[in-house]
Image (cartoon, rainbow, N blue to C red; front, top):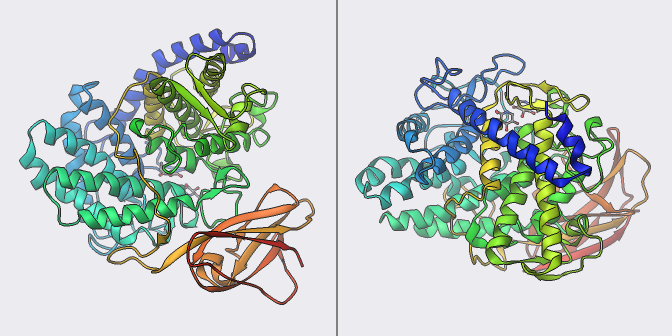
Length: 577
Ligand code: NOJ
Ligand code: NOJ
């Protein structure tokens, strides 16, 4: 229904702006209602779900999403809690209290990941009556407790400052404390990623865990529950340190997972940036804020990775918005664009525009230069005041670029406004789960960002990355010792379909496994590169391998060997043998 407007993009930016305005005015209320319809007990599409339980989608087959995921529920309720605590929707209080009760109960339900104090909080999903789901699944998923803590802390800060202190300390805090304790104990353990497929370390999970512990420390201090504050802060610092290791300086993007054997270009990273946005943190790159040079470079690489993989993107200018999905190699339900992943770049860019406007300038660095050059080929690194023509040129083009993602979703939104999970890569028709709660929530938050609606930050301003990372979690955490970032570059000529991986003698190099060897980036072909966090001051052996359609070719003997430095970082330059 919005096809006409999108086609007009190249003709006049204002036509695009108007179409986006009109889409938002019709879709905004539909999205809000779509969220509420999927929450028990009285949501119109959630009948049978317990009070406060968010159903992922009413779809009960192919795929069956008639479950409650901690991730989806927490992201959805974070948005509702933001609306309640800022006065946008004062009617949500009862529903939020239902959510608190539902999650407090779910925390106590024994499940295949464990019990309350033995890992069970990492269970990804439950039945809608709050009983355990016991079938096979990619578990645990360690982002859930962190996201739930973030939602509940937002609510807790509001209630505490409005005088409801007893309920916060006696009822809400124990639930939050369970989740923070889980993050402290398990952050350094292997997790399935948010897409429930890759078991390794995952940027989104690390980023939201960092946020939860950081704001958890401040919240606990505010309400006088100080016994674990120092462990929250210690592990938050370790998480912030570890977070840096996902950055791939050669490719200019954030590698989503340490395992998985893919490019690592993934909506995981864009979602992490928008869900750890703190307007007070400016364009800080340590926390990958939406307007940071690293997050902007990453956004370009992520978006560009979909230009040629979906035929609905063909013919679109190389600097205009396209439909995006979870990651370019995705095949789930056909491997299509998702509404929530296409809204995510829009939201990141709206957040960025809001920060630049607030600070009255924007900064172009050598890292973000390729991102900005999409909008003005002559721009150079430097700081541009809001009064400069460069600032005006860039920000107005970036606003249109951001609106373009909304316009693409608008183009593929059916006339009733329903948002499924995906839409066809070849013709744009809706696919997979209908009425996905998270799709609706992602529309709501993107539209709020476009409107510069201000929500509370979480203490991301002015953080300093520790100079060496400790990988020892608290309680049940594994590892121990510090790590250093080692960049491996290898010159290797490959044939089409062939990729270079690394494997070696330590767990961070997959312990000589070929199946989970780490894929190098070919961004600077014929040099292949990867940066890996390895144990400091340790003798490590490794080899590069080639994989082509499952066939593995090893480098010739002997093994390569290095001794890692005690701190800092180092680079190994090799040639394939
Ligand atoms: C179901 C999960 O929800 C989805 O994220 C995943 O891609 C598929 N299983 C395939 O593993
Ligand atoms: C599959 C997605 O990959 C996962 O992130 C989500 O939690 C479930 N579907 C439920 O929406």
